[in-house]
Image 1 (tube, rainbow, N blue to C red):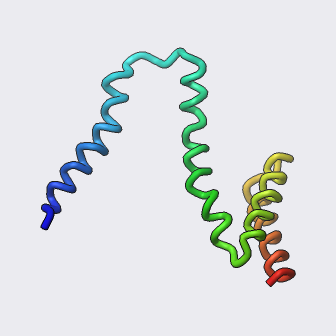
Image 2 (image 1 turned 120 degrees about the vertical axis):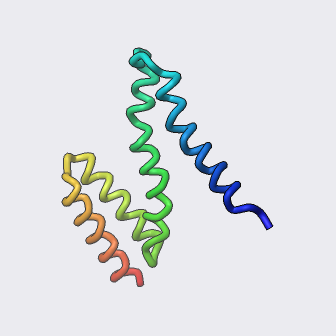
Length: 101
């Protein structure tokens, strides 16, 4: 039987090293524009990677999720705020599931 405390120790070391290494290695501000833009978009990409599969799988009809993704993207592209995007996506899913269910 594996020792649970060893798992917790390894997890702690990995977690803290990921957070501690950038603080100890990077002491000066980053001046490279490519690295700055890469680090700027990391949170958005991470959120998209986590939510994209859920968008398609959470609805009863995957086509409704895809349609909501497209209409929500278009609404956001044309300067819709978060509330408007959410309403458009919900209405799109409702329409698709009523029509095609």
